[in-house]
Image 1 (cartoon, helix red, strand yellow):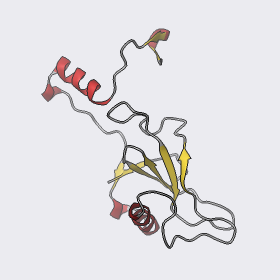
Image 2 (image 1 turned 180 degrees about the vertical axis):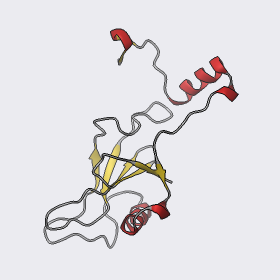
Image 3 (image 1 turned 135 degrees about the vertical axis):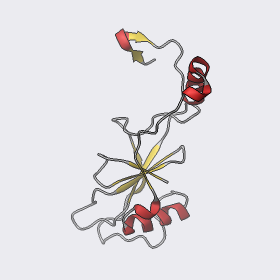
Image 4 (image 1 turned 120 degrees about the horizontal axis):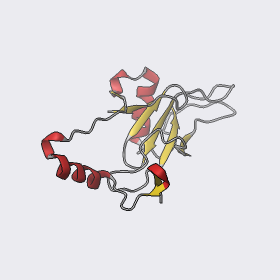
Length: 142
């Protein structure tokens, strides 16, 4: 169980809708508003290569490399490998309190020096995130 302030265990941890309902009961429906602190971006605002990759991965259901994706003689793009979210930069739990599993997807084909910093990260909750700086900054793709 997770420790909270003062080293005490949380007796009844809440997630998603339970947390939302708790605050609405305490403060009233009209007084509770949840802000999404994650920056978001429209698909059309992504760089051209990212738009193309997004469409390709979407067509295959985010299940690995998509048809026509390029690599080089040494390395193919990484598509669908587990991404650990070690620093909890993205949500940990979905609305039901289930742990979200993340997978990473290269946007650009690897050069002979390896992979670049641009990735999509897809969560088991259905959300997709874009990073152009190797997991420093994320944008939720809408």
